[in-house]
Length: 145
Picture 1 (tube, rainbow, N blue to C red):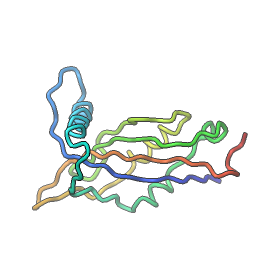
Picture 2 (tube, rainbow, N blue to C red):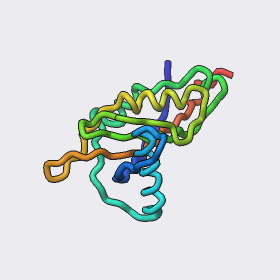
Picture 3 (cartoon, one colour):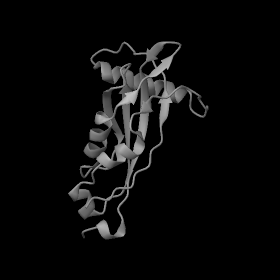
Picture 4 (cartoon, rainbow, N blue to C red):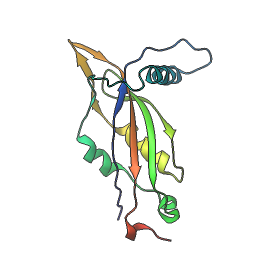
């Protein structure tokens, strides 16, 4: 029996790719997103968000708690960054801050499998970068120490 409690917060910023040498396209988009995040720190930004098809409950159902994390009693939040392309597919993803013990991989797996309704403004679709914190919490009876 798996018991996982997760919390979600979406943070979204538009971006343009930087021309940086020796980096992948995904790296370029990630670094541009970080650059814009610093520029907009403290500002409330009202933008269209990609809509998660099936909702967060469906995403949470796919999330698994690794045995090593359960045995070690590891709890906390894995921060994931990903890019939703114009088709609503997750194009690139990475862990910004992880916990280890297989929880980073579990978080990335569900993010990569997620499908979104892409942002469409005036008939044009846009790529959007998102940050999704995924919280892992054990219930008292789940710790197998």
